[in-house]
Image (cartoon, rainbow over all chains, first blue to last red):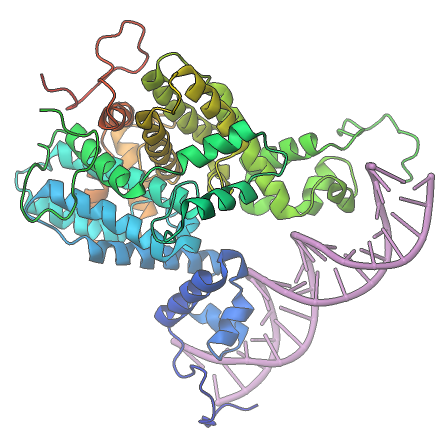
Length: 242
Length: 242
DNA sequence: ACCTGAACACCGTTCAAGT
DNA sequence: ACCTGAACACCGTTCAAGT
């Protein structure tokens, strides 16, 4: 199997091994079969390379996972470009995190592991600071980033774990949801608890998410994003008062 | 090393292997050295047993991790007993999740993985439903559980990852925080981004957490927990208006 | 600079055997 | 019912060698 001349019969991706290509392939594998089935040897094979070739572009498996995490944050950042309206930018950040979590549910556990704010996100944050003017960054914005990101990450995590009804999976009928929950709980679970689980998972997720994000942003001191015409996020329940 | 008679020289825990004891030892190991260093063989050794003995109480390593997760939720549930005031119960639930995350930062990634609401939590939820009266559970409470839990989990996760300043670690001086962040970022990171990271991590975490939880609860339709005398959570920033 | 096979230490789990 | 050593398939990584 000397590989100096390309056999050209291979549909398998060959050619230049790149950190980029390795990261992409790793994320594909995670998406398709879960984090636990990501293997250096399997990954190399899927790239048509020898296992050890990976180590020319990646220090270790941990380093690879870090790179995947950063890639995900880059996806998020791309979905939340800076805006002249900081409150709306925070909304889009929340949506970006949540949507990315939905696209990569199996990768969620490596999202927040970096040890610092991931550089791709920092890039957008820095730009947003500039946009919002002032010599010092607005403290409402600073607080908003931390709190909104925390909520969105937590939401994505619980959603991926099935602790929340997923509108995605959800052409799910009432009956189907009940069956899913009943099956997931240990068989001897008392009816009282099964009922509680079914009740909690019955709430409509969309308005809950939007309303909570709005509440958090308002809690940071921003005016409620009232009847702005172009607003993508419609306020839905128990949020307003006036 | 026949073990029919106990040598009595061993300080090592011996005697009856139990699912309980195995779970506790697993959590200890995770707390002490991280999730990745939890090993069936190492765990067995720490319990003074042969590796395969574990499998008499645990179906697989995945099953074990599930049991650890459930144990953590039991800790959380114990810290958030039902209350006559649903809004205050939601506050205590948020605090319980966050505090437990602080005590077990290395275990956070297995918290929300179960696939359903964990039974120990369901137990408290069911009781809280009963307390709040009415034939149907209050929708404000139902929404509150999902949103507050999501926020608290996300907060705990980001906090454990160092994306948020930890008040725990924080007799940390300004200078120390800056050094920590600078070191954690890749060395070639432009100053603009390092500055952004330092700014975001400068905010005081305590009031942010409490204020966000309060905002979410209020967003669910509950009255702001105004000047109730015994309230443990003091409202802190940009939350009130009247 | 990039690639790679062989080899090693380790880890989860099956099996067959013990009490 | 609970325990266990031996064995197996697999996985991350080191090394020495190639181009």
